[in-house]
Length: 192
Image (cartoon, rainbow, N blue to C red; front, side, top):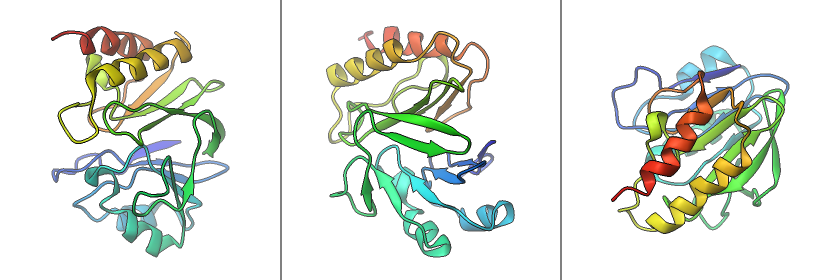
């Protein structure tokens, strides 16, 4: 089960996905709100935090979550503050009841990862792809539009057209014709 703990939060934060099942994991920690309390209301134990990228709105609560649940954080680059273990491109990570493939997808930020479960057809897209063809900004440090387009194209080629769920770093999740939103992001990112 996937629950967005940031749903309804009005502070500037990323989405925070609690992925429950065989391995209970948090995807991104969010920022600027108390995420520990809603976590404690739902689970007694957390096995890990997996980070799509280390922009402050995704990791602001990371230290509090790590301290409260005595867990480590996994991300692409252990040189980034708070990241204890590296997930390599094409590496696998268990989230809930499924195995996800980590896809290194820079362009929004150099350490950006997307996570795709081919068997369940679920994609955690971080800030690479959003609902309705939205895509990550490239005007921040480490942002690069050409690189972002290459990353979106990689996701388009990798995920199955039967993609069931798209969970983005901001905005609503998509559970109906999710692949169309991924394809649209590839087209929209090419617009000037």
